[in-house]
Length: 326
Image: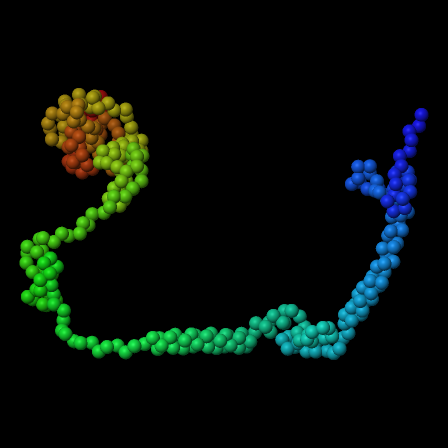
């Protein structure tokens, strides 16, 4: 059994035709428009006949415009900039004066025209300033009143800054107070700074407030702890940079030197001992048994890089150096 052919009615000719006789339209659900192909062609012809007169008129206007825009060479001119000959053409607007846009720009920004333009702008700005000055003068004169003649009464008396009494000595070099008691009774302004947040402590990383600019630590303890840590770092770097290095035990050095400070010759304990380099590490000394001695921490700090400790190597001689190494 064959399927029946689908049909539809054209809205223009009102005839029932097969679906294939209608204009294709992808926007419709059926894929076809509601007008057949012959009716669609007749509709286009009727639209053309109705608008033919307008199209012909527009076409004639376009043709006439093109004909009017045809350029005709009129004469040969001379460029005032490069002194070259060029052909001028007649077109809507003023005639051409320059042979190229480069010559036109050179003529526009020539030094002579620039001077004329600057003088014209200067005169315009001067006229504006003069008018503004005249207006300001008129406004000032409108509200002007004569100044009363001042009465000369002599210099003002100098008074005490504390009790407000007139001072006996009216000289400029006279003090501001009438007596020492008035000077002492006045309260001087507080010159102390207000506390502000300085940031974080460089040692403990805690926020703190201070009244001094440039403070880096929140307390004296943090400052001393940072100094000790930096001192240990510097000492470690100098030891590693020494030409000769040996593993040194401070207790062994103390037993060798008899628990006596080589600077003050007094007894040393474990709470006050320190290792002293006879030739300082900063001066190129070695970190060896022969170049070290026992000393009080305070004596070692006071001596620093100077003092008679370097002579200890010469006084003890070669034998003492060998005994130190043993």
